[in-house]
Image 1 (cartoon, one colour):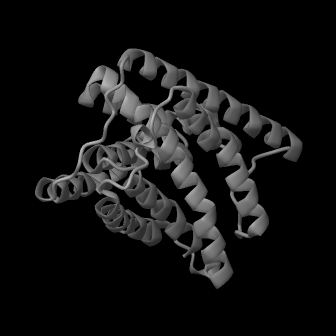
Image 2 (cartoon, one colour; image 1 turned 120 degrees about the horizontal axis):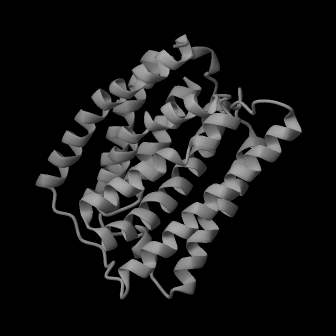
Length: 261
């Protein structure tokens, strides 16, 4: 077994250990703070869930195709930005808008649904944001301790990095949690729906791990499996706070802070 594969395997129990207190804190906070339920009573939950599966599969295929074309054009691994600037931010928001945000909004409008059915609502917003920020900072601190690079720190890099990762956080949470998870739970029930959405969210990162990070397929699979614990944490936060903003801010901080510090 290679050293790289061993390192990837070690991250799985490490992520579990990090996420256990996140689950506990989420449960504790929502146990003593009453949240307002969302109006997500679909007339045909099965039909809405199956449609959401098709949307997620289509987005994943489109993203994989785009990664492949960029990989071919560059002639190798895409990597991640060493510095974040306006050009990187505009490209990222354009990509996320086209592949993640617009399809969800189009489906919501076509199905004559409300934004509340994808977790976009004023209900529980302040509480969800506050909890997401606290939890995100806790996980991000671990990222700094185990992989931070103080040499990346600069005012412009911090600002553009935040805007860059805001696209990733909002787009992925809107698609996978607000849209997909809500419908999976409505169809399959809380436990099965949460499991399906969380595992799907983790495995959808396979193309990114192959074309951007440069892992081989087996390594990419192990790396994606390592994301399942944090994916469950995002999903559990959405489930308990009934608002997409908490998982979004938590996601943004976990990606952003270790990348610019």
